[in-house]
Length: 257
Image 1 (cartoon, rainbow, N blue to C red):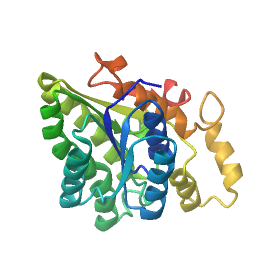
Image 2: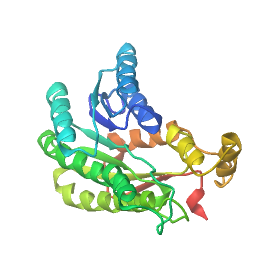
Image 3: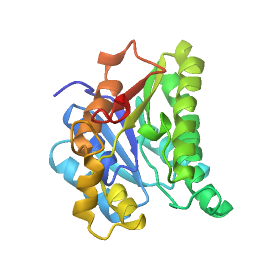
Image 4: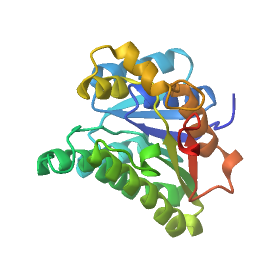
């Protein structure tokens, strides 16, 4: 119950899916939780629910593609809670399913704005607070497709590869400040984003598509959001004090082939 006791944790894209699970599990382990999301109703409802369970939490409307929005929210969270100790960069979109020869510049840029610039902006404006706090942990959600390729969604794959190497660069850059930076690489996790992606890819029977994609993993099924959230709790906690610049792969064996 106390793995991250008293740590101020920002979770972007925290209203649904993996982000929500991260916010809940961090809160249960003693964290003070700042939920950042564009989904106001869902984000505020989560903050209210967490407070009802005795967890200190607050919601901010944040579009991570807006640097001004990010800076304001992070500064407000630091002022309200006293510091920023953990940043979980979870916000992301899958974007267009078009292949490289079909995708438009606008469709490409939309994915990079959230998945890459969003990580940049959040890290950029969390770092000064972490330096003042004497250290911190940044956890960047990449993907199995930040490690391997596949014949679909090229903008998404490019963005997640970027997040992987951004994590390593920042791990080296900020190690003297006792700020650790790691990436997490989920396999297919059953979330609203994955369900939407299957539909956008042409699946008419979502249950059958879910099973078919699950079968691609040696364990035989998709993961749950909590499978990722517990990995994030580990990286946020002092249990991982000697872990930085690493890739935590949680993929049911997908990349083991």
